[in-house]
Image 1: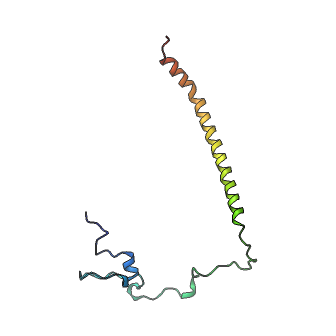
Image 2: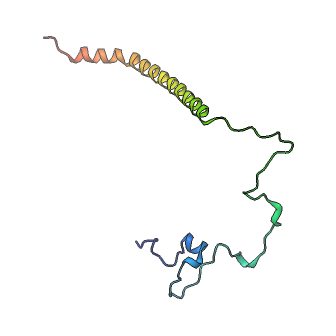
Image 3: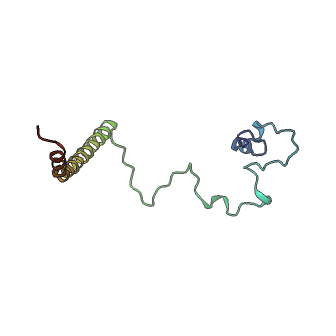
Length: 120
């Protein structure tokens, strides 16, 4: 099966996004469209200002002044405490499940051992 990584007919994302970095092969095949080109020459469907740009900060209407983030040492200590509490609870649950399983299986284990072990 041929490798798709070396197939010159499948342009990579870099080749499509940055055509100046790609030297086209002399294969004479159809050129792949560049990602910045619009299909069929159609213009944008919506006006430019219809959607917020990712670099714009969205602030709710009537927002109060922002509160500074807490100190990183406080955050670290609180996170550690929460994780330790969760670990203690998970360990207690695991011990309870192990104890319940042992209590349920112990009579069968004892009966099997007594049946299999011969006196003397």
